[in-house]
Image 1 (cartoon, one colour):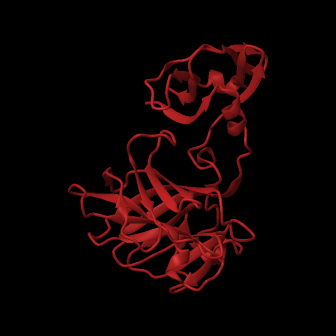
Image 2 (cartoon, rainbow, N blue to C red; image 1 turned 90 degrees about the horizontal axis):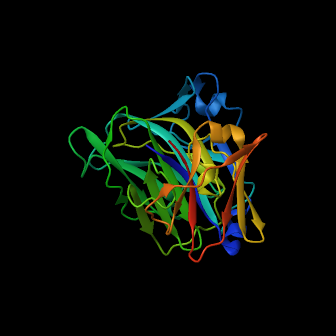
Length: 302
């Protein structure tokens, strides 16, 4: 199976857009001594509601339980972010099923520990309602609204990556399960709301509540682009505009490790094997001439 990391296009205006600087705001691997997360994380994680000490870390994994009440948060920005796009990527395993009513266990929040529902934005929910026997589904809500569910069953003990996108201008939230790209045609759901975000977003939070079951989180990433939070090992691709086309290049080690370019006439494909790259020293590059039609490229790994 191919893991598609991002799509690029050879037309100059969009080349400039692709080159916009990404920003990783938080990369949390929970590499702490075993114990209560708020106690062993050197102040990075703080209890903001519930009984302190109930969210624990063991072997680099935190556990969220439906039988507990502690909620913890971590600041990724000095002040509230009120515009643009935010992404979060969570590597999780559901060790015990939630209830049919379910609960939400992750969200963005503003810097005020007031508990106001309007600042708990991008809520990731879990439930067994609508899922097959022995499975669960996850869903997304902008705020207090009814979640929109991803039509994809998740089994207990299955390792999955959840990717959340918040468009702060359009007040919508998108949730993917194991996305192959930001343009994935399936395995996602979107929630839309007209409400704003108060003082802006500067924190992420984990929540424990009745109906959750048991969730283990192995890694959490927050960034400003999809590529900031998807699974690692992503080579950087640079584009140089030349007189009659574009030259794309990336580290030769990435090319030799199996990363390839694929091409299509539109964002949703169909995709085919792209031009072979030429290795010169520590770089692998390919020249792509201008054509009569728009050409999309994506980086994939076999």
